[in-house]
Amino acid sequence: MTDTHHTVYFELQDALAGPGCALCALALRSMRRYFEVLGYESVNDPGIRDAIRAARGFCEVHGRMLREARDALGTAIIHRDVIMSVAETLGARAYRPTSLGDRLRQAISGERNGGVNGRADALAPQQPCPACARRQTTDQIYVDALLQHLGDDDLLPRFRDSAGLCLPHLRLHWSAHPTPRPLSA
Image (tube, rainbow, N blue to C red; front, side):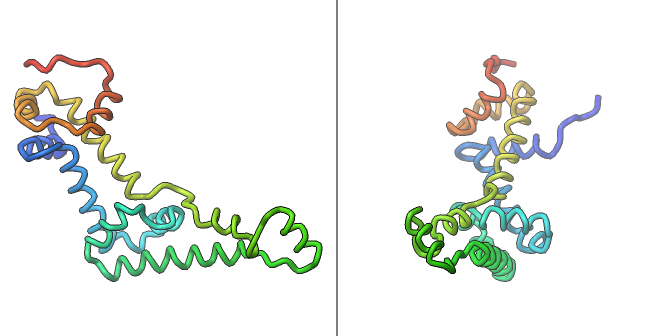
C-alpha cells in the first residue's frame, strides 16, 4: 500500500504537538513565508503588483507583517507603487469647476473642496488585501486536510492531545463539515 499523505499532513502532525491552535500556527508560518517570498522573488510580478495596487496596499495586520519581514527594498517598491497608483487615481478624479454654473452645481450637490467624496471613494480598496485572500486559502487547505485525515491512527491521537482549534478555525471546520463525526478509532 502506498502512502497517500502529503506535506500538509505532516505539517499538521507537527503543529498539533505545539501550543495553541495548530491551524493558527500553520497560518502564521505560511503568512511569514508569503512575505519573505514577496519581498525577494515576487515583488516585480505584474499580477501580484496589480492585486496589491487594487487593494490599496495591505490591511493593517498584513502591513505589519510586511514590515516585520525586514525587506526594505521590497517594501519600498510596494509602497512606492501603491502611493503612485493612488496619486494617479486622485489626480484623475480631481475636479475643478471652470464656470459659475459648475460651481453652483457643486455647491447645490454638497460637494466641497473639488470633489472630496469622489476622491475618498477613489482611496477605497478595489479588491481585498491579497494577503488576507492568501490566508483564507491557506486556512481552507489545512482545514480540508484535517477533515480528510482526522480519523487516521496517527493524526487522531495527536489531535486529542492538542489544544484543539480556536473558535474561527472550529467554525471553518464545521462549515466545511456540518455533520459531526465520532472521534474514535
